[in-house]
Amino acid sequence: MSNELAIANNINLENNNSNNVTYEEQKGFLETTLGKVINGGIDLGLKAILPDVIEDGVIEIKDSIVSDGFAAGVKTAIDNVIDMGKSVLRNIHRKI
Image 1 (tube, rainbow, N blue to C red):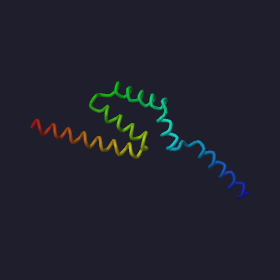
Image 2 (spheres, one colour):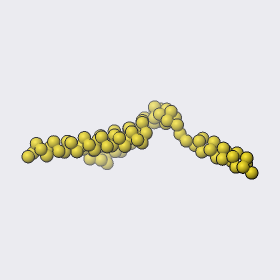
Image 3 (cartoon, rainbow, N blue to C red):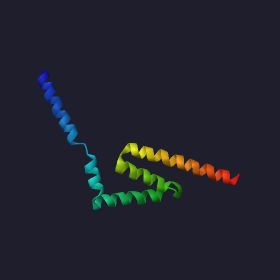
Image 4 (spheres, one colour):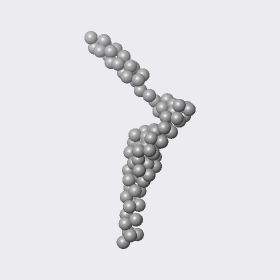
């Protein structure tokens, strides 16, 4: 009985692993013409719906997530928010 469970678990693990997309596969797709067209289309869509002030930051975050993963995208987002806050504070101090 335990032997059958072990075999069933191994089959499930193999099936689950075959559905995952590797980093190399994702990067390879993004380097194809279709991948570049889709990425460019997303950039154009973001520029159309976002205010000029934040569109470049959002595109930078998207690019970071696509190229380096979610954790890098979060770090980029945090860095962009910090930079934006510093810029706002500088502008406030100039007006005072």
